[in-house]
Image (tube, rainbow, N blue to C red; front, top):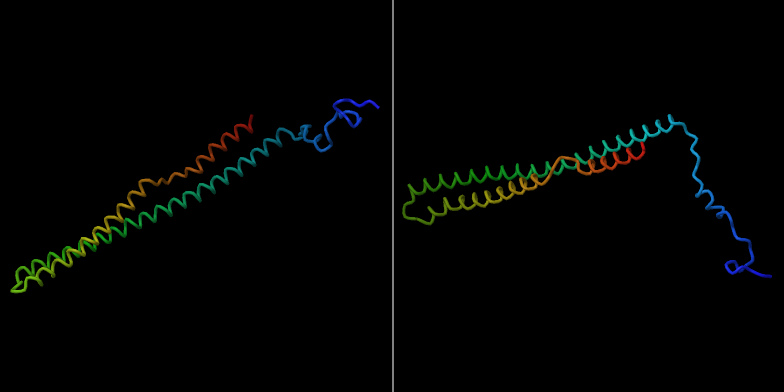
Length: 164
């Protein structure tokens, strides 16, 4: 028995693809009408738009939550600034009052105005730091939903490809 060099088993060469591959090689015949295709495309586009709106709403909600946290930093810093102002006014009142009436004990006169002054300056520094932190992070943030805009650009390209 003579066998071909490429086919040592002696079986005849295959002219068709294997059965599982055969279906993948033949394009499916689409019997849908143009109206059905247009309706399906419209439904898919509508669903896509609803999903994009949900994504935009979620993204904006997250951004507003983040921004409100930074606004809270500014508000707390402003309240601390007000408390610092009150402490500094108290230091000035104590300093003037003790300066007029300090008598023989200069240390008491020093302690009466220096303590509220030091505390007021510390509170003012903390309030200033919170305000600066809130402002700097708010400048970096944007309420524009960047992820949603990016996916909408991709969806526009998809829709253009579907229409072609």
